[in-house]
Amino acid sequence: MSDEQTKMQIVGQSSSRTDEGLASRMAAAEILYRVDQESGYADVLLGGRLPDFAPADRRLITRLVLGTLAWRGRLDYELAHLTGRKLEGIQPAALAIMRMGLFQLRFLDRIPQHAVVDTAVSIAKRIAEARKASGFVNAVMRRATRETAPVPPRERNEKSFLAVEYSHPRWMVERFVDWFGVANAERLMTANNDAAPNAIRLNLARGSRAEIIEKLIADSFEIGAPGRAPETIVLNGAPHFESRAYRDGLFHAQSEASQMVARMLAPREGATVVDCAAAPGGKATHLAEMVGERGRVIAVDLNLGGLRNARGLARRLRHRNVEFVCADLTAALPLAPSRFESVLLDVPCTGIGTLREHPEIKWRLKPGDPARMAAIQSRMLENAAALVRHGGAIVYSVCSIAPEEGEGVVDGFLARHGDFEIDRGVAADGVLKDAIDARGFMKTRPDVGGLDGFFAARLVRK
Image (tube, rainbow, N blue to C red; front, top):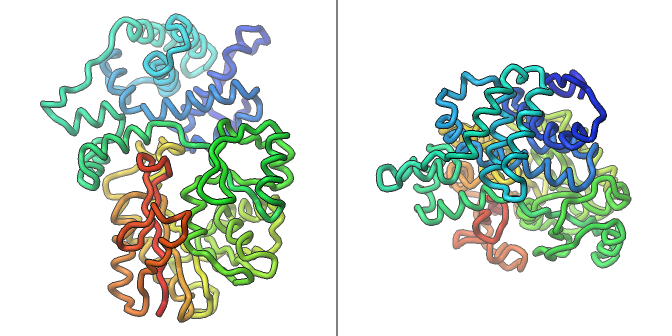
C-alpha cells in the first residue's frame, strides 16, 4: 500500500505464509478505515483493491467490508458496551479492526472465534496507528467471545429497538415507519442489510442474448436468473472485470431497477435523446443501444471526471453515437428549448434506495437531506423539462424511496406546468408492469421483488 492509497501505515513487511493469510483482511480493514476517515466510497475502494486478489479472497473482502458497514450501528452499540467507552475516543484504525472482528463473530459462522480474535490482534500490530492499541483490541475481542450486549427492549421504545436490531439510524427508522408502516419497515431494513444481486446489462448491440451468454459462460461467468428484460442477467457470482467479455464490451454492471429507467423512457430507434445528469454513463449507453446507430444521445453532466468515465464506458461498449456536454443543470442549459422528443433526468439524490450497495450512506445522511436534495432536483427538472418538445416525454428518476425526492418533486412540477401530464401507459410494458403504481409511477424496493429502491415518472408534454 502506498501513501497515496491510504494514510494507514503498515509495519513489519514480511513474506511469511501468516502474512499472506492476513492480506485479505488487512485490505478490508484499510477500506473500512478510509470509508470512515476519508469519506471514501466502499464500491470505489473495493474496485481499486480487489484485482490484487484471487476470486475467493475478493468475495471475502467484499463480504467483510459491506457487511461491517451495513451492521455498523448494531456493532457500535455492542462495542460501546464491550469497551465501556464512547467510540469517538477510540483510535480510528483500531475501531475499524474491532468492528470487522465483531462482524465476523456475530454474523459469520465459518470462522472460529479464536481465529477472529488472533487475526484482529495481528492486523492491529501491523498497522502503525493501531499498534499501541493491539492489547486493547485483544481484550475487547476476547470479551466479545464471552458476552453480548442486549438489544433495547422493544416494549420500552420500539424505534430504539428497531434502530439497533436492524442497524439503521433512528431518524431513518422513524421515516421508514411513517412511510411504510412497522411491518414493511422491518422487511425493508432486513433487505437493506442483505447483499445486492449481481445484475449486469448485456450489450445487445454486440450480439444476441444467446451469443453473449455463451461467451460469458466461456469466460467462467456463473449465469443465474434471467432478469426482466432481454438485456438483463443476474449472476450467481460477481462479474469478471478482467475477462475478455468485459474488455470486448459485452456487458455493463448495472442494477436491474436502473436498467428499467431507460425502458421507461422507451425512445424510438433513430431518435435524439438528452440524458441529463448522465455520469457515470450507465443509462446513457443503454439509451445509445436503444436508439441505434442512426440515433444520438447527448450526455450532459457538470462533473467533468464523471463525463470522462462515461466516455470511457461508451468506448468500451463501442457506442459511437454518444456526445458529451459539461454543463450545470441547475442553470440554463446550452441546448435549444422545446426541441427534443426524449429526455432523461436521473437526478443526484440521497441514494437511500441503494443501501445494499452503498451501506455507508446510512451513516452519512442527515434527516434534512431528502428535503435539501428535493429543492435541487426541482430546479433540475424545471430546466430539463424545458428541452422537451410538444408531444415529447421526460422521465424523472431517483434511486431513492423518500417521497420528497419522488412524487413530491413531480407533483410540485405538475402543479406549476399544466402542459405536462403523467404517462400512465408505461404499465403496458411487461418489463415494468408490476412496478407501476395506480398513478403511473415506477416504484421499486429491495424488499419487494429484490430491486433497488427507485422512483421514476414519465411525463408527456401535451
